[in-house]
Image (tube, rainbow, N blue to C red; front, top):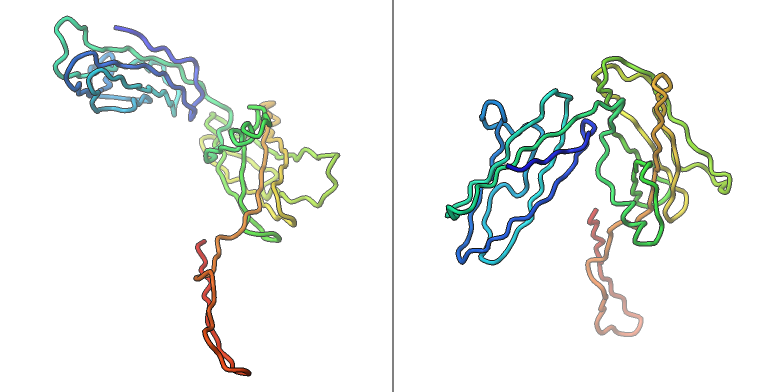
Length: 264
């Protein structure tokens, strides 16, 4: 039996472990994973998932598997047994059995933000963004439009606390502020969520950035945010790419109707 030990992981976050299996036989190898409680032997995946969970590997090929540890609570014992049921396994081969374990840590605050690829896109443009920033993204269909982004902040601790948002001014830009925090301060009760609201009102075409700090003074917690907005063109097009009026007498008139299609 081999061990997979995950480093301490914050609640609502994830860590991954990869391993590969190679089929050295001449027939297709079917497999099916299961995760059981290490003490009771009962099926109980807990905070673990394995991807893919079942499938087959062609002769001479290999496949990569990912075990994820995603705790949503702090517990004393996260140990589980991950085993693979492999059809037609040679008697000379030992069964694949892995003992997995991890440690969960309780954060002061957790933000329920959708995944963002902004950092990766900037890296392709040779612009590095510090990992300390969490990203809030906006897309605006045109200018002079008020766009709203909402997300939840969770307090998983045993006591409530006050929070506040602070925008970091950019001394090099004297433009009219395009971003606004509608929830600049408040109180998140123990075990509860608080809805955060930002607005983006661009007045020119392009990509815009703003930097903010989320603070919990009583816990001396500061989280850096980058708020990003892009003005995109609406997906609107003409039904046809040309208009043909046909033959006309001098001083004659004709009319054609062209429809505009809104694909938003």
